[in-house]
Amino acid sequence: MCDFTLELVRSKIEATIKNIGDMIGWEDDHEVIGPVTYAAKQSLLCLLPYIVPRLKNLEEEEVIYQLVLDHGDWGIHNITITPAGDITSVFDWDVGSITLALLSDPLMAILVDLVTDGNGAPTII
Image (cartoon, rainbow, N blue to C red; front, side, top):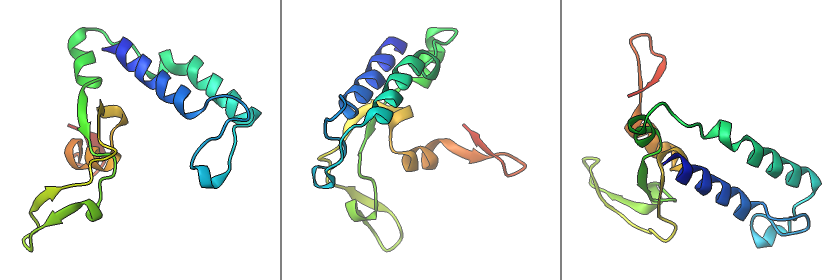
């Protein structure tokens, strides 16, 4: 799973930051990749083995590098809720994907995985 994760993150970096002079971001912004951004891309690619480490065993890798269904645009504008606060539907899945939990919507991760310990400090379940 670590090899898959490395390749996925590498391909996301390559797809986002291409070559000097290429467009980056939204077309209407008319932004292009300059030398500083391109150098940052190269640094990120060199750091990948440290950002996505190999773990001691396959069980640990399966926990850390698990795949999840990510909505991609999670928000009140894409759900219906009952007056009691129950979510009855989630819609607008046009940017949804199966991705690594590490790369998924952080708001979803906070609601699912993060809690506070006895001292009120954040911790992960």
